[in-house]
Length: 187
Image (cartoon, rainbow, N blue to C red; front, side, top):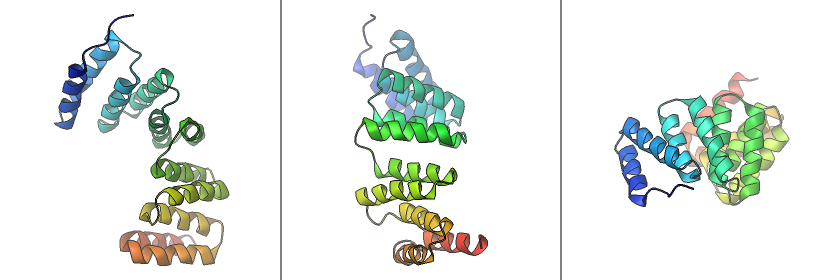
């Protein structure tokens, strides 16, 4: 096995990324991976660069490599799920979110995104289950509450939809307006 590059190389690549020098950062991360392709954290950083440059296919491939290097990383599985979802591969996104959740502590955002994927697949009860977990982890998040309101509306549960709307009106007028518009245009 080849020795790993010094942490300074990773730090330099991260600094290049932070300063918007994405091509140089990508080149350095690719060099690191050519030297040692087993570095899950480097694959994750490369995936973020590919996302930032709108290379969704490349991002998905890098996230996939990260999960292969570290199958217990919720972050890598979540990144892969987002890439699949953005590529409109909802079944693959669902499977990746489930692996992220099984891998360990998951952010409210991951639960929210799982709910969104379930809703896109027409699985509104499953969406509500995931969104409920997101709310448990992060109360009063307007994005999560908007998605809950949308799911309740799709399930034709007007009382719950109205409760979500009322809470949104207190928290975020823009998200409340978004839910109101959705309700008005989908009837």
